[in-house]
Length: 151
Image (cartoon, rainbow, N blue to C red; front, side):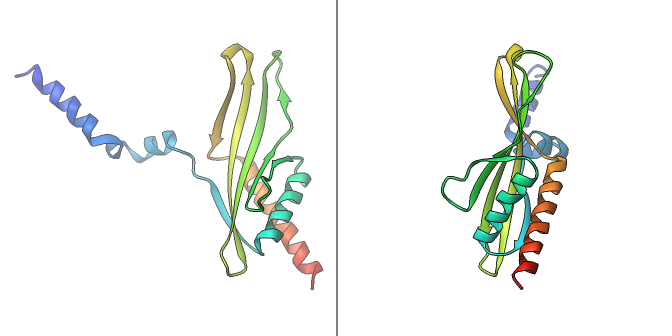
């Protein structure tokens, strides 16, 4: 009976799933949620200001997929000391108009690492990075400048 008890205990823990894990552990290993901010302006206005913000922050828009509701931009490639090693930030934006003259911007930053000694490329979504606030601040300033210039 004593030998069976640990197996039942282990089986019970497996059945309880992720809900029994502490919130900090779930947050750390779970998917990274995008940062979300809402801005005054229609979808096209906010999208064009976002493209300009990327340009001012030295990012290149790499994919707009012909739809103004999605943008992807990337930083310059930063080479490392080792041959074949590099890092780059890739930013994905999803824009959604709420119908009340505001547009919601979802942003997720991913760090792309190319490392020849570790077997190639890898990507990691970032929960926290200074570029989130830097981009949102720049976007807000550009939208305010446009609103002030159109009056």
